[in-house]
Length: 182
Image (cartoon, rainbow, N blue to C red; front, side, top):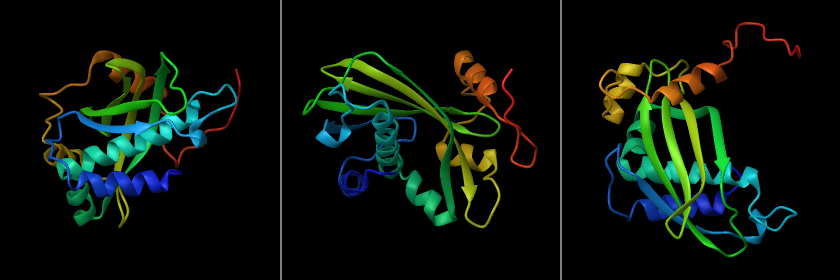
Protein backbone atom coordinates (compact mmCIF):
# COMPACT_ATOMS: atom_id res chain seq x y z
CA UNK A 1 0.00 0.00 0.00
CA UNK A 2 1.80 3.10 -1.22
CA UNK A 3 -1.17 5.47 -1.24
CA UNK A 4 -1.30 6.17 2.50
CA UNK A 5 -2.88 9.64 2.33
CA UNK A 6 -5.62 8.37 0.04
CA UNK A 7 -6.12 5.39 2.36
CA UNK A 8 -6.61 7.68 5.34
CA UNK A 9 -9.10 9.77 3.35
CA UNK A 10 -11.03 6.64 2.28
CA UNK A 11 -11.10 5.26 5.84
CA UNK A 12 -12.30 8.59 7.26
CA UNK A 13 -14.94 9.13 4.55
CA UNK A 14 -16.20 5.52 4.60
CA UNK A 15 -17.26 5.88 8.23
CA UNK A 16 -19.46 8.84 7.27
CA UNK A 17 -21.00 7.39 4.12
CA UNK A 18 -24.12 5.21 3.96
CA UNK A 19 -23.60 1.60 5.04
CA UNK A 20 -23.49 -1.21 2.48
CA UNK A 21 -24.45 -4.86 2.59
CA UNK A 22 -21.47 -7.11 1.81
CA UNK A 23 -22.95 -7.99 -1.61
CA UNK A 24 -23.59 -4.32 -2.58
CA UNK A 25 -21.45 -2.35 -5.01
CA UNK A 26 -19.26 0.21 -3.25
CA UNK A 27 -18.14 3.29 -5.17
CA UNK A 28 -15.27 5.66 -4.38
CA UNK A 29 -14.37 8.72 -6.47
CA UNK A 30 -10.77 9.67 -7.24
CA UNK A 31 -8.83 11.97 -9.53
CA UNK A 32 -5.72 11.03 -11.53
CA UNK A 33 -2.80 12.75 -9.80
CA UNK A 34 0.64 13.52 -11.26
CA UNK A 35 2.12 10.81 -9.01
CA UNK A 36 -0.14 8.24 -10.74
CA UNK A 37 1.33 8.84 -14.20
CA UNK A 38 3.77 6.84 -16.28
CA UNK A 39 6.08 8.16 -19.01
CA UNK A 40 3.21 8.12 -21.54
CA UNK A 41 1.32 10.62 -19.38
CA UNK A 42 -1.58 8.38 -18.35
CA UNK A 43 -2.25 6.40 -15.18
CA UNK A 44 0.40 3.73 -14.68
CA UNK A 45 -0.81 0.13 -14.82
CA UNK A 46 0.63 -0.64 -11.38
CA UNK A 47 -1.25 2.27 -9.82
CA UNK A 48 -4.55 0.63 -10.70
CA UNK A 49 -3.73 -2.34 -8.47
CA UNK A 50 -2.74 -0.06 -5.57
CA UNK A 51 -5.94 1.93 -5.92
CA UNK A 52 -8.01 -1.25 -6.00
CA UNK A 53 -6.89 -1.73 -2.37
CA UNK A 54 -8.67 1.51 -1.53
CA UNK A 55 -11.89 0.46 -3.23
CA UNK A 56 -11.90 -2.79 -1.26
CA UNK A 57 -11.20 -0.92 1.97
CA UNK A 58 -14.19 1.36 1.38
CA UNK A 59 -16.39 -1.68 0.75
CA UNK A 60 -15.14 -3.50 3.85
CA UNK A 61 -15.51 -0.48 6.15
CA UNK A 62 -18.97 0.51 4.90
CA UNK A 63 -20.30 -3.06 5.03
CA UNK A 64 -18.99 -3.60 8.57
CA UNK A 65 -16.69 -6.42 7.41
CA UNK A 66 -13.55 -4.52 8.40
CA UNK A 67 -14.76 -4.10 11.97
CA UNK A 68 -15.76 -7.78 12.20
CA UNK A 69 -12.47 -8.97 10.72
CA UNK A 70 -10.41 -6.69 12.99
CA UNK A 71 -12.37 -7.68 16.11
CA UNK A 72 -11.68 -11.35 15.39
CA UNK A 73 -8.02 -10.76 14.57
CA UNK A 74 -8.43 -11.57 10.87
CA UNK A 75 -7.00 -9.81 7.85
CA UNK A 76 -7.20 -10.28 4.07
CA UNK A 77 -4.25 -10.93 1.77
CA UNK A 78 -4.46 -10.87 -2.01
CA UNK A 79 -3.24 -14.17 -3.43
CA UNK A 80 -4.10 -13.56 -7.11
CA UNK A 81 -5.15 -10.62 -9.23
CA UNK A 82 -5.87 -9.85 -12.84
CA UNK A 83 -6.77 -6.63 -14.60
CA UNK A 84 -7.77 -5.66 -18.13
CA UNK A 85 -7.36 -2.12 -19.44
CA UNK A 86 -9.79 -0.62 -21.95
CA UNK A 87 -9.37 3.17 -21.87
CA UNK A 88 -6.63 5.39 -20.45
CA UNK A 89 -7.14 7.64 -17.47
CA UNK A 90 -5.37 10.96 -18.02
CA UNK A 91 -4.09 13.65 -15.62
CA UNK A 92 -6.70 15.29 -13.42
CA UNK A 93 -9.57 13.17 -14.75
CA UNK A 94 -12.15 12.07 -12.19
CA UNK A 95 -13.14 8.41 -12.09
CA UNK A 96 -14.90 6.00 -9.79
CA UNK A 97 -13.72 2.66 -8.48
CA UNK A 98 -16.66 0.29 -8.13
CA UNK A 99 -16.10 -2.79 -5.96
CA UNK A 100 -18.30 -5.83 -5.41
CA UNK A 101 -17.80 -9.17 -3.69
CA UNK A 102 -18.37 -11.74 -6.42
CA UNK A 103 -18.38 -14.77 -4.14
CA UNK A 104 -16.35 -17.26 -2.16
CA UNK A 105 -15.17 -20.78 -2.79
CA UNK A 106 -13.56 -23.41 -0.58
CA UNK A 107 -10.45 -21.29 0.14
CA UNK A 108 -10.91 -17.62 -0.77
CA UNK A 109 -13.12 -14.60 -1.40
CA UNK A 110 -13.30 -12.82 -4.77
CA UNK A 111 -13.86 -9.13 -5.51
CA UNK A 112 -14.51 -7.56 -8.91
CA UNK A 113 -13.50 -3.93 -9.33
CA UNK A 114 -14.09 -1.45 -12.13
CA UNK A 115 -12.54 1.90 -12.96
CA UNK A 116 -15.40 3.93 -14.42
CA UNK A 117 -15.33 7.34 -16.09
CA UNK A 118 -18.46 8.99 -17.46
CA UNK A 119 -20.34 5.71 -17.08
CA UNK A 120 -17.81 3.76 -19.17
CA UNK A 121 -15.55 1.00 -17.86
CA UNK A 122 -11.90 1.99 -18.32
CA UNK A 123 -10.44 -1.06 -16.59
CA UNK A 124 -11.74 -4.13 -14.78
CA UNK A 125 -9.86 -6.18 -12.21
CA UNK A 126 -10.52 -9.20 -10.04
CA UNK A 127 -8.72 -10.23 -6.89
CA UNK A 128 -8.71 -13.48 -4.96
CA UNK A 129 -8.11 -12.99 -1.24
CA UNK A 130 -7.48 -15.36 1.60
CA UNK A 131 -8.29 -14.38 5.13
CA UNK A 132 -5.67 -15.12 7.75
CA UNK A 133 -5.67 -15.09 11.54
CA UNK A 134 -3.14 -12.88 13.32
CA UNK A 135 -2.70 -15.83 15.69
CA UNK A 136 -1.76 -18.00 12.70
CA UNK A 137 -3.71 -20.08 10.23
CA UNK A 138 -6.48 -19.49 7.74
CA UNK A 139 -10.02 -18.37 8.57
CA UNK A 140 -12.37 -21.33 7.97
CA UNK A 141 -14.62 -20.80 4.95
CA UNK A 142 -17.89 -21.45 6.84
CA UNK A 143 -17.00 -18.57 9.16
CA UNK A 144 -16.01 -16.38 6.22
CA UNK A 145 -19.27 -17.25 4.44
CA UNK A 146 -21.21 -16.20 7.52
CA UNK A 147 -19.33 -12.88 7.72
CA UNK A 148 -19.90 -12.18 4.02
CA UNK A 149 -23.49 -13.36 4.12
CA UNK A 150 -22.75 -15.62 1.15
CA UNK A 151 -23.14 -19.39 0.99
CA UNK A 152 -20.65 -20.80 -1.55
CA UNK A 153 -23.17 -23.49 -2.51
CA UNK A 154 -25.92 -20.95 -3.23
CA UNK A 155 -23.58 -18.33 -4.78
CA UNK A 156 -21.18 -20.29 -6.99
CA UNK A 157 -18.42 -18.41 -8.72
CA UNK A 158 -18.95 -17.74 -12.41
CA UNK A 159 -17.29 -20.50 -14.47
CA UNK A 160 -14.68 -18.13 -15.93
CA UNK A 161 -13.65 -16.98 -12.45
CA UNK A 162 -13.42 -20.52 -11.06
CA UNK A 163 -11.25 -21.51 -14.04
CA UNK A 164 -9.04 -18.43 -13.61
CA UNK A 165 -8.58 -19.27 -9.94
CA UNK A 166 -7.64 -22.88 -10.71
CA UNK A 167 -5.21 -21.89 -13.46
CA UNK A 168 -3.42 -19.27 -11.32
CA UNK A 169 -3.02 -21.34 -8.15
CA UNK A 170 0.52 -22.13 -7.05
CA UNK A 171 1.47 -25.03 -4.76
CA UNK A 172 1.36 -24.39 -0.99
CA UNK A 173 4.34 -22.65 0.66
CA UNK A 174 5.54 -25.91 2.16
CA UNK A 175 6.01 -27.51 -1.26
CA UNK A 176 9.08 -26.83 -3.36
CA UNK A 177 8.24 -24.71 -6.38
CA UNK A 178 11.41 -24.24 -8.42
CA UNK A 179 11.48 -21.71 -11.22
CA UNK A 180 11.90 -23.86 -14.31
CA UNK A 181 10.98 -22.38 -17.67
CA UNK A 182 9.57 -24.85 -20.15
